[in-house]
Length: 97
Image 1 (cartoon, helix red, strand yellow):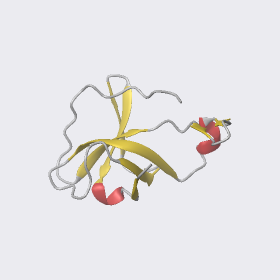
Image 2 (cartoon, helix red, strand yellow):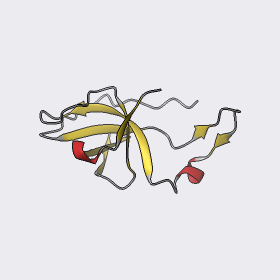
Image 3 (spheres, helix red, strand yellow):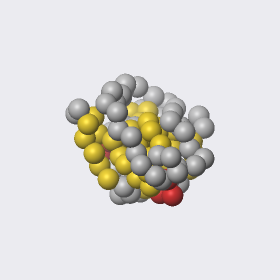
Image 4 (cartoon, helix red, strand yellow):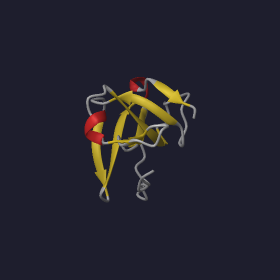
């Protein structure tokens, strides 16, 4: 599995916004077959790790793995690392794996 770089800069979201570090779309199946990101790009949703939450974003904490719409929020680049900033209400689900 490919290791994702982590954000070492501080981005503090305000109000109900959350910062998410997207997880690579490249996935490995249970049988060991690696599906490239191009095959997953058609999916309507992405997964990511919450890195920061605003003061009004309830029910979510940094470190949570979440599902969100691919086109939701704002793409931000910090120190060469791409993150997504979106409203808490834009999150679809928390993933437990």
